[in-house]
Image (cartoon, rainbow, N blue to C red; front, side):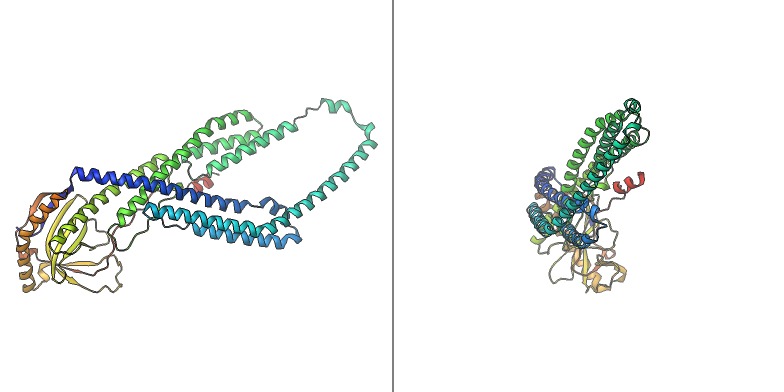
Length: 470
């Protein structure tokens, strides 16, 4: 009965429950660490925004001044250097261990502070130049204003007999009211702009705000219709938007932590560690979409967690029978099942294990042919191929048939030992030893885990949508 043996494999419920408890415990630590990291990321982005706006009003006033060209050039150079250094800090490969994440957050915080402090120290003399120039322009404007006002007073005194005071008294004075409305409108539009530019705004909320922005602008600057109605509409909507942004941020932190946990499971048995970069906030159109992605990641993590635990226990049991730790082999770039090879150090046969997504496990005896990997393959993740019975010589087939018979005794002991560890096998199929089942695996060592994080197919870039709608 020692041809390929197929079973359904799963972890017993108690073991699964314990693994999930440990996963949640670790997830909480990751969440706390990533909260700190994301806070420092946002602070660094705020530093970049500050640098962009710093002295901008002074720059606008001095752009055409010949004597300020050198200061303008130095300021642009300092800003560019500071922003580049801060942006480099944001190129973070997020670790999967909570302690390393906290270390990463602290390093970001300290480095950003140093860069910003250096910027302020270097920009101080230039800032003084701009302030001096602005004061000089202000004095000139005051002098001009006083001169113009004095001329106007003299002119009015000379022509006072020509003024019709009855017209002045009957003319409604509404310029101040108009200015007040426009000032309020500008303030509201500025608030709306800040909200719609938030990475944490939902697409539906953004559209509502843009409609209100249109109403406010129209009422204040175009038709002079009921401005108060537009203000009330904004005041009603604003608290809901702010609350949704807060909820979005909370949901994103859950997603971010789950992604880091997923990366840990993904790389657990990989010789080459894959660096997974979570999607940015603006890629999600709504809180529901974000939560759905978080749930998908949690499901993936749980599946990988179970697979990794099964593999770990198989490794331990196979060691007891003098087989080395399972090495993953990849036959095809798009293969769905996971394949492992367990072998004795110097023997030319071993046990091939295949675990499917449906939790079916197959074990079979195979010959082993190790080859050198040249690196010329179109896909370097592929490291194995199967040589079937028809391509083996008689001596190889006889040797493998003998190994199949020996495995007939070993397989039940492996299954029994795994059962003691909470890995339950349910028999599906047993094949008799047969020359037709003889095969050889030709493979090279030094492989990587053949799975990459799936990229979302639906990416909603809110910034682009905003530009389109505008």
